[in-house]
Image (cartoon, rainbow, N blue to C red):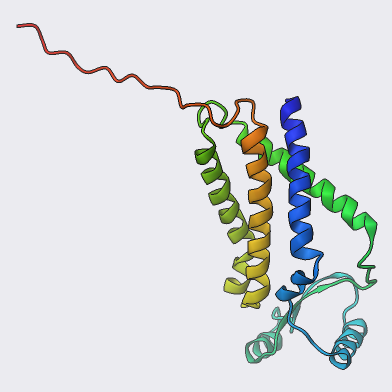
Length: 199
């Protein structure tokens, strides 16, 4: 249990560093489309004037007959809206973000600990980590451009980033912190051949 707890923390650090590279360095802007300062100011003013509070909005609102018609005509937007704004250098976000990643890694460690003696070789463990990480990230991210017709570039980037973060964390746990160390030979299975009946 102590080994898994230490592994969860180490995996969370690895996940945090990977996420920092994807989202807190200039390469993170690859995921976004850009608007000039005048356009951004106009949109910000329109948001402040028309959206009442923090929330996620579909614009136009398709819950009415006229809204449905307008939604079909476009343009449309899904707006993740924060009415108060926040500092990009807000350290509380970093602290809570690491806590979130630590909880994810604890759950990941709990799941991987069930492999234990059943799958002792690292290659098989790594394959499970990679495939499940890709599957989880695909489910979380790629539904938005498919079902809601969102921009593919943003959600493809976050799909890659989330998968990478999960893979790095999972590999750290699978390699060094499971109760049974990776690399042990798989238990041998003896198959007993049926014997010929005595004549």
